[in-house]
Length: 103
Image (tube, rainbow, N blue to C red; front, top):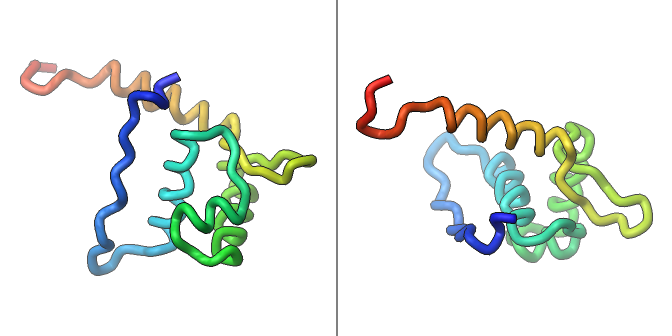
C-alpha cells in the first residue's frame, strides 16, 4: 500500500472560525495512514486530546459510518464507505487536467 510513501505533517494552528472538533476528527483519520486499527487510548495520546474526547469522536465517526469497530478487540478501523470515497477521489483526480494542460 502507499503507507510507506506518505509523510504526515501536523495540522497548522487553527485560524479564526475553524472548528477544533472537525480538525481533531481529521487528525484521527490521518492515524489510519500508518496503521489499520486504533483504540481510544492510543488515539487520544496521538492526537493530544482526553480519552473521553477521543471516545466521543470515534463513536461519532462510527455512527456516521466513517469507521467500523471490531467486536472483540474494540479497535476502530476505516469503513468500506471511506474506501469507496477513495476510489471516487482517485477517479476524479485522473479526470482533472494536469497543471498547465488545457482541458
